[in-house]
Image 1 (cartoon, rainbow, N blue to C red):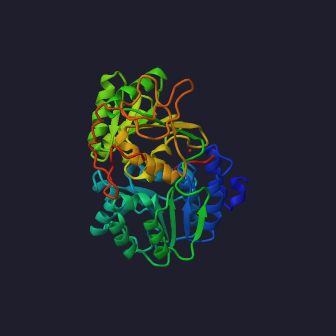
Image 2 (tube, rainbow, N blue to C red):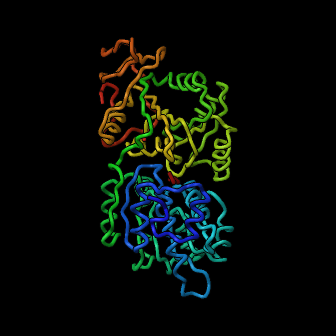
Image 3 (cartoon, helix red, strand yellow):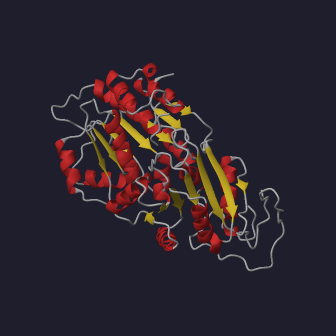
Length: 428
């Protein structure tokens, strides 16, 4: 199948061709025709499989072929995203695919001044891409008019709920016209998301191109058991020994991200950190430096697990496992994008095995565990460790002191215990 078979306009097909794409991904093959028919969508697909183009292309077509009844340009489509980076990315996609259309789009989010956004909205835009909090600021100041919204998109809606945006989302939904088309896209769908969809969507078309909560198949996943106090040493060793030129590393906390970036810099690896406490200008600069190869290692919190679209990113490292297992899927989805192969490495200390077990349960498969020679954990947990050939598996427990517990808080549902064993056209 080609994009010519999906019912897209000549202008959109030109833009897609300009981008070098000819064959739509499975999510695009199913979502684009359904959206063009005006149907509500409840779609799930693996990270990196083209969900953004899956809704931006038909959205642009619907807006471009129907004229607003208002004399002045009014906002007719609203796209909500959980992070600033994702908002910018979606806006860029709208600009890229709508290059031959006379539609205007704006991205509005916090961390930057509100006045330039007010001026942009005052001039009139067709499509607003926004984070919930800043959008409510504009609503409160009456600087945005959502009374003519025809299409609402909730992108990465599960992440918005994870970040505590549910109340903000409900406030926004309450002022939108009820007679609208609603599209929900995400890589994962939790029970709260399904409950939200049941009260939000009208006879939706459900699309699921891969089993829920699964990683892209082209991403190789491996776990390296290691003592917590030797993680930084092992990470530096792997980057230097394998001569990795571009590595995205995830930590659980902002302070941890800053500290690790500083330590890696001391090891001679040019590094920078990106997280929620950084200004938008600093976050944008760090991401650009990383993409351009000026920085070798980008250390990030989960603010970067959604919305980072880096071409051919070869390696993602979980320096610390996430507390929420679904975040693991999004983290490693930063590699192996657009059909490229990628590798996701997790450095797991004994106290993190409860998190690892939750991730394996979510993925419905065990992850390969390989001890790096010279970095054997001092107190291996009672789990099956897949050793390299020629090495014996140590299933016993050591009498040495257990590693220090992580500084980040563990999940309240089931506290971690040191003794408990426990992967074509792509934009998002």
